[in-house]
Amino acid sequence: MRTRPYRELSERINADPVRREHIEAGKRAMRDAIALSRLREHRGLTQAAVARSLNQTQANVSRIEHEEDLYLSTLRGYVEAMGGSLEISAVFDDERIVLDASAA
Image (tube, rainbow, N blue to C red; front, side, top):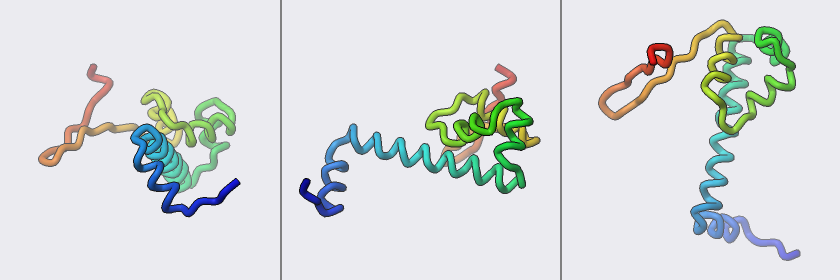
């Protein structure tokens, strides 16, 4: 097996839009997972504590934190298990609109 410089591999990935999007999706999933676990840690909670609030296993909370694409209902439940509420906003250059899913 021949080793290749990182630059060469990077150029091949960047040249292929499908491969590039796959990489970007993975990066977004990692950032989202980090954001959820940091939020939980910021609130001083363990995965086990959140699991008890959700009436689920710690392993399932870990899965939620690492899920690439969460349902809003799952995310809402996760946040509510920590004692919060979920707000979703549409953000534009000139305004921010809070979306109220319960009004739909």
